[in-house]
Length: 246
Image (cartoon, rainbow, N blue to C red; front, side, top):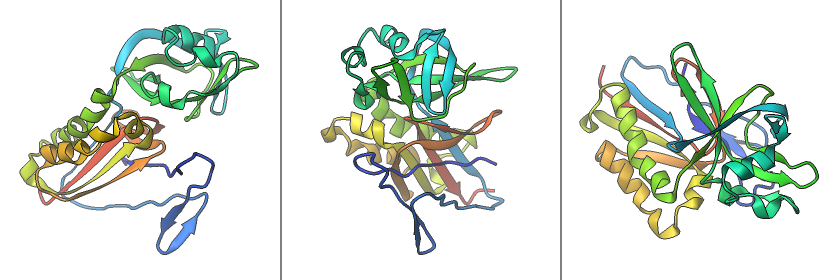
């Protein structure tokens, strides 16, 4: 059963986020809405970055920390893959690389018998003592990862391409849409110049027409990869489209 949505966050990423449902507020909870219908529901979940040729295998990790890629300190590998664009100035001192890494995420490579999928990972910070890399998803030894890249225009255009793919998932047209729910990563939103952000709802409506929709900027996004299952990724956006079409 596909699950799509986003994680709560706060303005300074200090653990002050909350969830709310049915008149109650939680500091460590999940708000879930289950929908049962015989009508068509279209959806899409994607990061929309470009792949690079740089890839390797996580050889040491724990929780959300990558210690080594291909038996080398993870931050040093990441620095080489990005040509020094993200972490070069942090290798000695450590610290956050959140904003720069938005344009150079890592991605888990997830395979089945027929196809290869990617699930994007947002690097958070560098540890100066061991050059490990803290990220926003759980990782495991043996995970294959690759470097992805993009720019703010590519990120902005997802507000058009992802709703369009949601329509295509059930062979729908914009005239079929009753309403929609759009989830967009807050990190990618902040990477788009402020003057350009007002184009996002315009692009969504270009895809789905005059149907109403609601949206949120999330800190980590839940979604479904077809033939794989429900996953948690970063820097992702998703669209759910409800219809009156059987």
